[in-house]
Image (cartoon, rainbow, N blue to C red; front, side, top):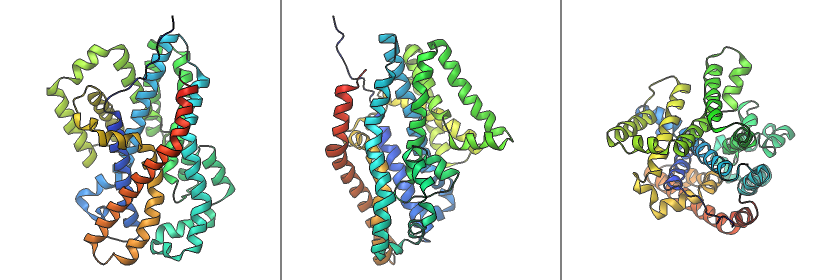
Length: 376
C-alpha cells in the first residue's frame, strides 16, 4: 500500500513573507533617496534606528522562516521514511532558487551597465549611477563570486556593489545554509540535533565577543545563527507540539511578546548582535503564532499572494527602482509630496506586476518540474 502524497502547508507563512519583502522594498526606496541627498525618513532622528534596520530585519525574518520550514520538512521526511533524499532536496532548491537568481544577476552584470551607458537620464540618481559606471565593481572575481552563490563575500569582503543584484547576498547565505543543513539532520538523531543548533548559536555569540579577526569575519559574513533559531522552533513544534501550542495560545504571553517585538524594531535596546538574536527569537514566536491562526490578517488572500511571489518582489525591486527613480528625480523632486506618492505607487505596483508575470510564466515552469520530479 502506497502512502498518499500530501503537500504540507503552514497558515500565515506566506503573509509573513509578504511583510518581509515589503519591508525590504520600503527600506531600499528610502535609502535610495537618502544616498542621492533627497529628504527621506533616514533624516528623521526619531525613526533613524527603525529605518536603518527595517530592511535587514525583513531579511532576518526570511532567515528564521527558512530555518523553521526547511528543518521541519527535513525532520518530517526523516521520520516518515527513515532517510532524507539529499539529491531531491538539492534539486528542489535548485529549481526554486537558481533560475530567478541567475536571471537577475546576469541582467545586473550585463544589461543594466549597457543601458546606463546609453541612456543618460540614469545619471539623475548619482550614487547608483556612479556604482554602475565604476568598472572596478565589474571584475571577473566579483562575477565569479556572484554566480557561485558567494555574493555576501563579494559585498562584505570586497565591497563590490552591483546595482540590481546586491540584495542577493541573503540568497547566497541561504544557499550556503542549504548545503550542509540536511546533512546535519540526516547524521544526527532528533535528540542530538537540537544541541547542534544550540552549539551553532553559541558559536556565533563567541565569535561576536572574540577579538580574533577571522572569527569576526565569519560572524559577519556567514550568519547561520538565525536559521538555527528557526530550526529550534521547528523541533519544538514537531516534537513538543502540545507544550509549544500551550505557550503560543496563552494570550497573557502573546501580546507582551508582540509588544516587545515592536519595541525591538523601533528602538535599540541591546548590543546590535544580541538585539538581532532577540529579534530572531521574537520572529520565531511570530511564526508560531501565525501558524496557530492567531494573526488572521496574514491569511488574507491578497497578502498570501504577495507572499507567494515574494521571492520575485525581493529580487526585482532594486532594478525597478533604478529604472523609475531617475525620472522622479529629474521631474518631480521639487514637490516632495507628489515625488514620494509617484515613487511608492510606481515602484510597488511595477515590482508586483513583474513578480506576478515572472511567477506565472517563468518561475512556475521550474516549480512544476520541482513538484513533479523532486518531491520527497
